[in-house]
Amino acid sequence: MTCVPRTSVVRSLKVDSLIFGSSIFVGDLHNFSPVSYVYAVQREISVFYGDEGNLSAYPIYSAPLPWARQTPAMQMEVTNTSPVICAGNVRVISISTASMVQFGSVRSIRADTRVKNIRQLLRGLPPK
Image (cartoon, rainbow, N blue to C red; front, side, top):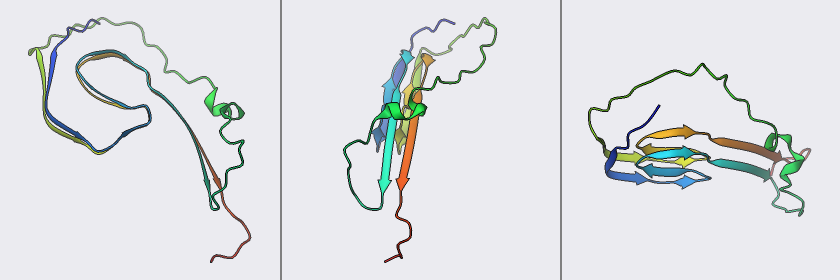
């Protein structure tokens, strides 16, 4: 499929939060490949031992990603009746963890996020 570039026009865009490998694009894009590795440790008592954050200790960060089966190639022809992509007023509350907001064409997206949450809670102590 070939994409004919178009002009992207956005009247206004308000984004409250953009974090962790995410992006905003106004216009055409060939490839988008964000990656976010998140390692989060939550403790009831705030302490740092110095050996946290070794991602190689967790297979979630190195395991191969599953891919959808490839369907046979198909021919597609797109006729854009307007050379302009128009968006009015856009409000986004949050864009997070290898994601995107885009006004335009994109040929390929591969978004990879791997999250490991560890919660270390105290046991056997009465609540205060």
